Image (cartoon, one colour):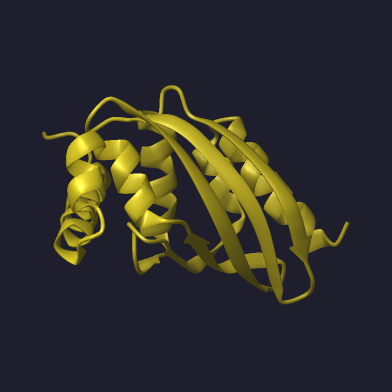
Amino acid sequence: MHPNAERIRAFYQAFKDRDAAAMGSHYAKDVRFSDPVFQGLVGDEARAMWAMLVKRGKDTRIEFKDIQADDHTGSASWDAWYTFSGTGRKVHNIIKAKFEFRNGEIVSHTDDFDLTAWIGQAFGVMGRALGSFGFFHNFVRKKARANLDAWMKGPPA
């Protein structure tokens, strides 16, 4: 297995083990992360997102497969099953991940999934009715960003 493929495997194994610090250790200091909800995260923002998801995702279960990598790029497929904390609804998300590497560290991580399908699962009837509209996508993104910003500030003093 290529060392970068092993890094991807170790990243997802750390996720399975609910070890956000280990996940973040595979990222370069200035890593860029993006997915359909969390867009344009850089550095500690990306690490904080994983820490928040690991801590809040009490019943999260993931499986990963199809890991491939060379000296510069990599990819994987992964599935996540969890209860969406905002509504208490069960979600099964199917994700395709792409990675870029520099000096053996992940410098870019992009996850892609069907946001409309995710919204339908996470928000139920309302999500199925409104999930294909851009304004609802933006609502979900803004709410997620506000949650991340609050997480990064820590508990109130």
